[in-house]
Amino acid sequence: MAQTVAGAGRAAIGDSEFDRDTAITPRPGEPGAFDAELSAGWTIISAVNGGYLLATAARALGAVLPHPDPFTITAHYLTPSTPGPAELRTEVVRTGRTMSTGQVSLRQDGTERLRATATYGDLTALPDDVRTSARPFAIPPYAACVGTDDAPEGHRPIPGSTAIADRLDIRLDPATAGWAVGAPSGRGEMRAWFGLADGRDHDPLSVLLAVDALPPTAFDLGLTGWVPTVELTVHLRARPVPGPLRVGITTRNLAGGFLEEDAEVWDSSDRLVAQSRQLARVLVA
Amino acid sequence: MAQTVAGAGRAAIGDSEFDRDTAITPRPGEPGAFDAELSAGWTIISAVNGGYLLATAARALGAVLPHPDPFTITAHYLTPSTPGPAELRTEVVRTGRTMSTGQVSLRQDGTERLRATATYGDLTALPDDVRTSARPFAIPPYAACVGTDDAPEGHRPIPGSTAIADRLDIRLDPATAGWAVGAPSGRGEMRAWFGLADGRDHDPLSVLLAVDALPPTAFDLGLTGWVPTVELTVHLRARPVPGPLRVGITTRNLAGGFLEEDAEVWDSSDRLVAQSRQLARVLVA
Image (cartoon, rainbow over all chains, first blue to last red):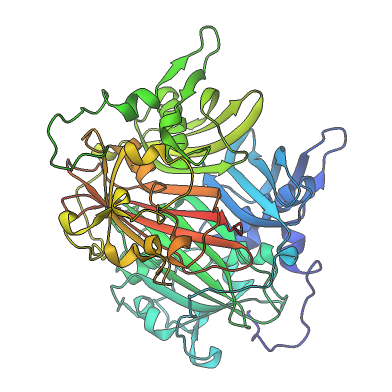
């Protein structure tokens, strides 16, 4: 089960569950093509988590583009991915001095699951000026927040397999966890401390995971159905420093069977490291 | 020059400057390929406006996908477009019963200018439930807002050509127009009434224009340089009813030489018809 953020035996970036499960292998003789093995460890119910998929796709782009970090990446989720082999085909769209753009398609059994387009750059090469007016949202200390395994029996957060919960260290703000005991706030908010269970520190790839790994804000709106992502865009704005992330997600516009999830991710130095938005479909349970 | 929103002689959707200038012509014998003529009428300085480009790209996708409306569309702006001929090549990525996904590439003289991916659906087929918690932002009445031609001499909003200003009917909230007289608020906000100068009502395509047609929020932050868009994503959530739109744009995260512009678009029935976000680069003047 999830360790505490301060847990011993931390896994290193590059040598952790997350790194092993997002690994890509170049196909000999097919430039820009890679194989991956989607792990059953990152599933909710039977679907592979969208942030995990996005991170895997981003690794493939990082392998073909001359810049290391996704500044902005957009994925369209075409069909549900399942654990098992996947094939990734990349295209270098444009390379420039400071930024480059690429595209990647992830397929399983000949069916396209995800298509992503991204512009990469080097986050460490950006100037130091930070004139953001954004301030971190309020959240109780880690120890005062609740884990997904704290929910009483019969009120497990998500029915079915939640294998991904074992790989994450998510502690929800109790103010946004009422839905787990049948008392959603109705505000459409989700706030949490976010770490990896094996203690791996964060990098841009795990931030891609962070924006899509909390329970859906729809739960806090009193909805109980599935909320599949149609499209997810993430802006990476800084490399996170070591320590847990804080992820805050808000939904304002639930209408016509769709909603947006707007996420912001803060690192432990109070830097806004990512902003994301997804369009998701609301399926009645 | 711009007419008032209530002006006589309104152009119809399908028969207006905007429709003529975003027209696409299928290439005989090349399925999915189109020609367009980018108009000099939608330029700022020498660059073709990004929202106009996005609308042109969206028309091409609308011509090849089985659904009419872009639910979510993302464009990466690779190189600056110039007035003149352009070639659009589309790819149908996936077609489903209620949604379909496509991709389009816009080129000039063999150089790719823009690549967009979008998922289309039918906005009129969506259920009527609107449970949004978003409320329209406050803005003074149209008559109490200021046009770009109201700025005193020497304080024109943007140096160089602003041909696009003649095709739009933008009335800025005076609270977000101080930068035009050297007194930016510093908050990074821009709010305006938005119409087309020839009185054409709005549709999803003109909403794509609306999210990228106001002066940059960077001006309200006291910056005067150019702010080229890297990537722009728009979620269309409802068809706008007739009448002017209200567009509100906010920037919170100016850091490392980049900023986000978050836009929301409200129609005259107080429906939130679109949400958008772009990542833009801040170039020092």
